[in-house]
Image (cartoon, each protein chain N blue to C red):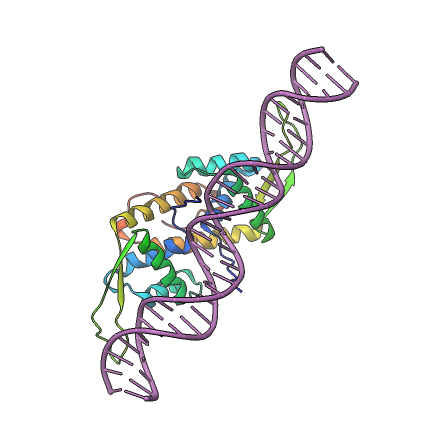
Length: 111
Length: 111
DNA sequence: CATTTATTCAACTATAATGAATAAATCGCG
DNA sequence: CGCGATTTATTCATTATAGTTGAATAAATG
C-alpha cells in the first residue's frame, strides 16, 4: 500500500498558484501563473489532473462560477485551498527550507 | 513522450541531502538526513531508486569507497552532485521561491 | 450552428514506495 | 586456517501514485 500523502512537486505548484490567485483561481489563470513564475511550459490537462487529485484528498475545494463570459464559453470552476491543504503546503515548504537552509551553494536570494 | 526533465519532489530532497553531506554521502546517511530534516519516514529503497534515476540523467555521479568498516559490511557507494545537478537544484528552488514569495499565508519563517 | 472558453477523458510514461533478495566485507570459533 | 554467522550496504521486482499529452466533450453566446 504505497501510501504517500505528500504533495508532489507539481501539486505543490498548483496549490501555491491557487493561493496567490485567490478569487480568480480556475484552470487557465492557474496554468499561466505557474508558467510565468517558473518559466516552464504547462499543459492545461496537467493542471486539471492535479486539481482533481488534490480535491479527492481534500486539499482543495471548488464550485462552479456564473457563466459570465464576454463571448460564449463554458462556466468556470473556481478552486480554493482548504485548511487541510494549507497545512500540507506549509509542511512541504518547511521540509524544503530545512533541507536547503545554510547550504552555501544555494545562498543569495531572499525568502 | 512524457519527457519531464524536472526534478521530482523526492529527487530534490535527495539532491539537497547530498549537497549537505558532502564527503559522506551514501545511502544510509542520505536517508537519515531527509528523515531528520523533514520528519517524514524514508525507506532506503526509495533513496537508491532516486539516486539511480539522477545518475542516469547526469545530475549526480558516484564512486565506490574503500571497504573500511568497523565490523564487516559491504563497501559504500559515495554520491556527489554534478554541475548540471547543481543547476537543476537551483532552478527548482527558484521556481518554488517565486511561487511562494509574498504569500501572507506562508510568511513567518526565515529563508 | 459556428465560435469561444473551459473542462474532462483516456492512454501512457515517470516517479515513488516497499519489502525481500543479494553482495561483500569481518569476526570468531572449531 | 577456513567457513559460517553477522554486519553493513546495495540492488531488484512489484505495485502505487503523480505527471504528461492531445483529443474529445461541454456549455455558453453571437
